[in-house]
Image 1 (cartoon, rainbow, N blue to C red):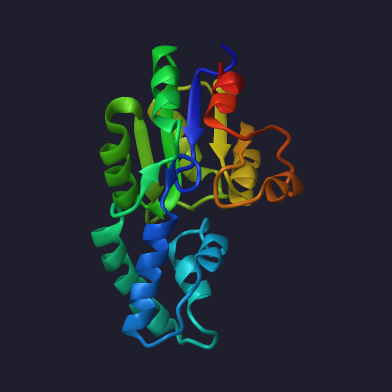
Image 2: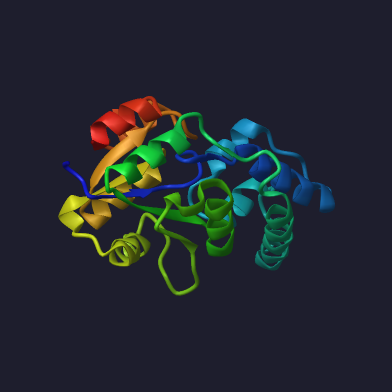
Length: 215
C-alpha cells in the first residue's frame, strides 16, 4: 500500500455542509437587515475559515467591530443548526470503512471551528476517524501547514507515507506547504478546473476512484 495515513479536508470533501452554512449565514444577515446570499455565493466564500466567510458575506464598508458581532452571531447559529441538512457524500462512509479495513490511519483537518469539526466527525463517522481538528487559536489555519503537521503527529505517521485529500485550491496549497502528496476531489465546492489551475495533478471524481488511488 502506497500510503499508510490519509488526512482529509472536511467541508466539500467528506461532508456536504453547504446548506447548513448558507442557512446560518442568511439567518445572521437577516438579524442585521443585510441582503441575503445565494448558495453559489456562499460556496465561493467557504474554505478560509469563518471570519473570511462572514467578511465576504457582509456588504462592503462594515466596521471591524460589527464584523466581530456578526461572526459571533453566525457561530452561535451554525452551532445550533450545523446538522440539519449536513450529510456525508454518497460513498464516503464506505470509503472510510474500507480504508480502515486496510489499516489506513485517518485524520480530518479543517478551517472550520475546532469544536464544530470534532462534533460533526463524531456524529457522522464515529470511530472511523482517528483524529479531527479545526481552527484553533494560536495555530495558523490552512493553507499554513501547522494544523496538518499536528495531525501527522497525532496519527504517529511518517510524512512520506501520508496523503492529503481536499476539494479546494486552499487544500492544494496546504498539501504543497506541508510537503505532502495530494489527491483533489471534484465533487465538492470547487470545479475541477480550479484544482488544476492551482496545480493539482491527481483528481478523483468519485469516492470509488479515490479508493483505487489510495489502495
